[in-house]
Length: 373
Ligand SMILES: NC(=O)c1ccc[n+]([C@@H]2O[C@H](COP(=O)([O-])OP(=O)(O)OC[C@H]3O[C@@H](n4cnc5c(N)ncnc54)[C@H](O)[C@@H]3O)[C@@H](O)[C@H]2O)c1
Ligand SMILES: O=C(O)C(=O)C[C@]1(C(=O)O)C=C[C@@H](O)C=C1
Image (cartoon, rainbow, N blue to C red; front, side, top):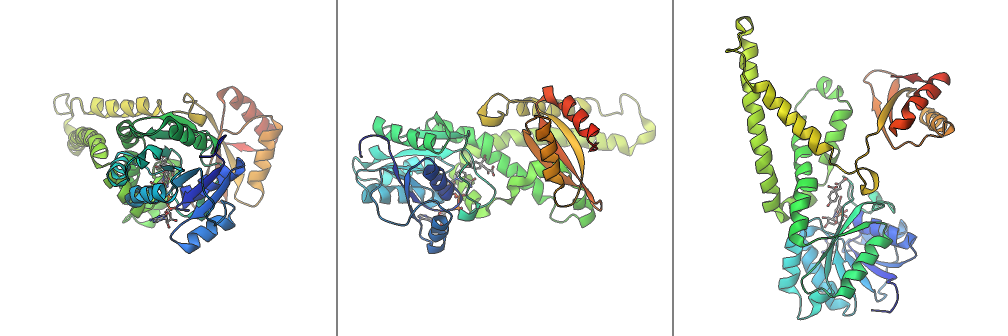
């Protein structure tokens, strides 16, 4: 290791995450060299500005390869660069830690520290890379029992340079946490979206923002996610067993309510489905309470935004004019969703703002001729 701050990184695996790490580190002034078995992937990452293709000796190597090869690649890199710290960014940590422990030569695993930036996209490949992908997102750092303090500090510095917020955990803590906050959400999005395959176009055409919110990540790469789910099988299964018991309760309640509805003329308190509505209400309330725990922007406490829904003509320049108008009112847009109504030449822009500013924004937009929904 060279003295002073780490400035030379090597990225091995230049897809979405490797390219994003390269772009982020270069923006922070680091030298970055790139490597990938796919000549196209590495050339593309270079052309996008993520680094150079050379064999400069690195201070730190970032393995951003698929989870099922990550441990082997970490060990190759520990052997190739005997003075470098090596980390990986795979979405599972226990399986990689055991792989490295089993394969690494004596003493070299001390230079390995696992990590996992909690940011990504439903797309793969260098072209989807973003320099600001990790901005304000948790970046989990997972030391091995024998990692040196210097190796841990090197990986913390790397995560900070890429604009992540460092959180240190064991591999077991990490895998249990991401089962609930990342892996099961992927499964639920996938299962929900799968129900749309055989629906006719009229039904799917009614989709509003709710479906979009719930299914964005159902577009993720099946090959990558098969590896992630297999790599955290026990943790994912444990959370899904709880989901299964909630689903069973929902099915029982819905069954009772469906029977009730099928005998509409014989409503009596005994024949009604006693307790079924309470079961559904409890499940929905549990969902409210879980959702309220999801952190807000930059990992802070959840912020309740007010949504101002503005009707905009579905034509070039409308959104730009709306942004300018909100800017003129001196109000920050915290989030934005666009919804297109089927068969209508307008779109709905759902502008999220801080609650203290929403009334002022509505008044301002109405006074300048915008239709508020
Ligand atoms: N996609 C996400 O949202 C996300 C978020 C955080 C972490 N991760 C983790 O980051 C890693 C990369 O995921 P991605 O989304 O960038 O995938 P990706 O498919 O976009 O990129 C993977 C890259 O690894 C390369 N590769 C394949 N085999 C390799 C090998 N043996 N050695 C070196 N490189 C190899 C591929 O050619 C490809 O360029 C995975 O371990 C994943 O779990 C993904
Ligand atoms: O936002 C997305 O598209 C993601 O899939 C990101 C996401 C997640 O938040 O669950 C997915 C997998 C990763 O390991 C880390 C981040």
